[in-house]
Length: 173
Image (cartoon, rainbow, N blue to C red; front, side):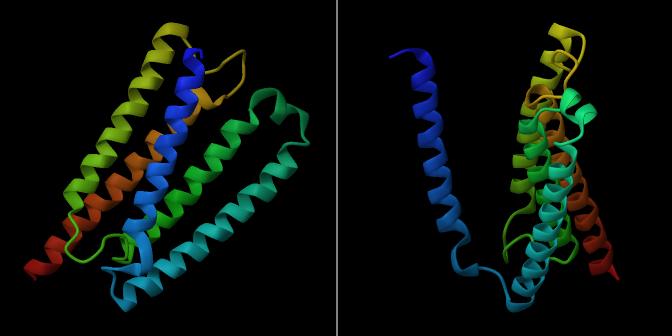
């Protein structure tokens, strides 16, 4: 077997483990009170309609030649997923429905920092090596997908920090 086959197998196993952990960690709303579950349902709804709108827009853009000459479909799909995640995450953070009771916000901020750092390093490395973020004049998954992913996690981290500061001020009053 060549190295690519090992990479595909490792990625598939990592995905399976991630799905198992995510299912176990998020099952049955454990750790959320009733109001948080209602607000999370609202966030899911907002995310769903955001994704639906983005997909319809992509269907239209995929038939427009200037778009297809400049943007790859894989980048468009990742951008849609990240926009949807941003809508869901921001809605949940603002309405105190993102974190479970007693869950560490600092731990999540550390995770955000790791994702931001990893994606930023990929973007900077690509730009350093090529002098542009485009591949053959097109916006592609690598590095532009990394740029979008890092940006969404940066925005989410900023919203969490702002919410933490606002909550501290509220507690002092």
